[in-house]
Amino acid sequence: MTRNEALQKLREARVGRLATVRPDGTPHVIPFVFALVEDGDELRVYWAVDDKPKKRTDIQRLDNIRANPAVEFVVDGYDEDWRRLWWVRVQGDATIVQDDAERARARSALAARYPRSNAGPRETVIAIHVAGITGWGAS
Amino acid sequence: MTRNEALQKLREARVGRLATVRPDGTPHVIPFVFALVEDGDELRVYWAVDDKPKKRTDIQRLDNIRANPAVEFVVDGYDEDWRRLWWVRVQGDATIVQDDAERARARSALAARYPRSNAGPRETVIAIHVAGITGWGAS
Image (cartoon, rainbow over all chains, first blue to last red; front, side):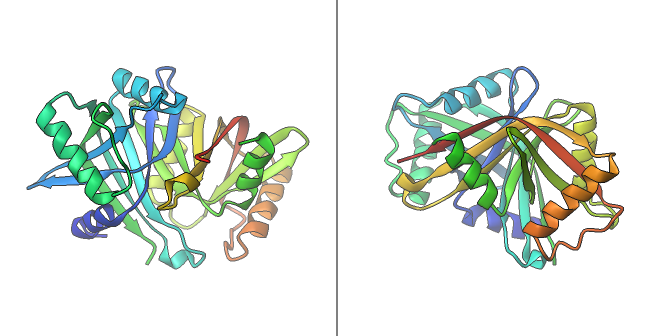
């Protein structure tokens, strides 16, 4: 899979599965919705934790990236015909966004992709600074 | 979600996403197909790496679990109606199966779930000894 094909899969994907590492060294993985923001060659992926009482898994994930910012996520297509399998994996470092302008940009990108997300202004926004993308297709 | 509901999701799922930790402490996540084997309260999850020339990602994953056996995987349902979202996460330790009888049992379980998998006798079989299951549903 070429880089352009992998990027197209990331633009189209509705859900990814994000892995972080807990402070005790064990992995943590959970589905997430995200928006890819492309600024020339610089790629960022944003997701948000809403401002309702946070779920334990959200808190765990934020604790994990504070202790170890390395994340990886995957988007993929499963098909009973295994010749159609594909995945795209993204590696990077995650940080909690503090800058107001960047938060606003991230919220717009998420709202454009997920019109019903109804994200609130106090939500926590996380940015993944993309360091690597790998794509694979069975055929 | 009750434990029984979570188990049922694991029995029905066609694909999961498995996270491991690389020796450098960064996470690794990739789709995988698996079979759940239930022996009373003892649960094991099997997957196999076929004996064709192994992909770099397969080798990485085996290297990871040799250095750090802790794994977590997730099965989930994505829906544009977020009230229908759910996931089940499984934590455990992964080991490469050496025992011939256990390898045969794992191969049978995988072949029953994935009739076209055509797994060969020299494939590497990995067992996850399930230590924890958590399930969540939006509604």
